[in-house]
Figure 1: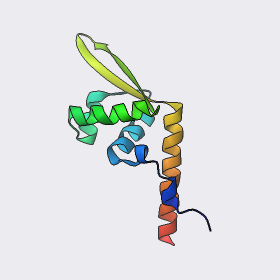
Figure 2: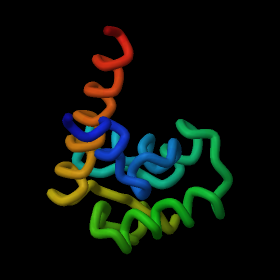
Figure 3: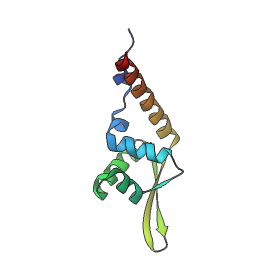
Length: 101
């Protein structure tokens, strides 16, 4: 008997806002904090906390700088983040496939 697909879900990745951050970050080289905030409808503090959790887990890199005179924060997914996202998607696909039978 094989393990249930939910055993493959990663608690850090699976939280819906963090999953959203990772999927958006995986679609581009880097993504700006304000874009993530608007796309995911989060407050600055909430988004900042989720980014910190992902960064501490080694799944995101954070880059701070300026665009003109305005401070900006960009995030990019790491290779470990891509692997964690791929594993999460695989577990979700297995769960859906199991449910569809």
